[in-house]
Amino acid sequence: MSVALEFRGVVAGYGDTRVLRGIGGSLQPGQVLGVLGRNGVGKTTLMRALSGFIPLMEGKVRAGELDLADVPPQHRLVAGMAYAPQEDTVFGDLSGSENLRLH
Image (cartoon, rainbow, N blue to C red; front, side):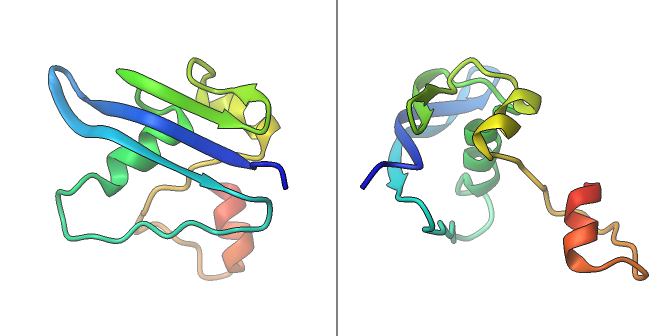
């Protein structure tokens, strides 16, 4: 089976601070990845790095055969990748799906 998303040796952070050090994983088509942990362990940094909102210091991110390491977030939609950060702003008259599309 082909790999839908693969990330290897991901190092990312802010300025000179490395928050992620050598993180890796992969997903097959149809699989879902959950990232759990206490505050400050790098969950948001991982999501921002995989989705292109912060640059990788090292490592690879691939969606199928497409190398995403230097692809900006708005162009990752072609690979089916999007990032919806946690926000307090939801619109009660919209469905959950509509709120996600809006963000």
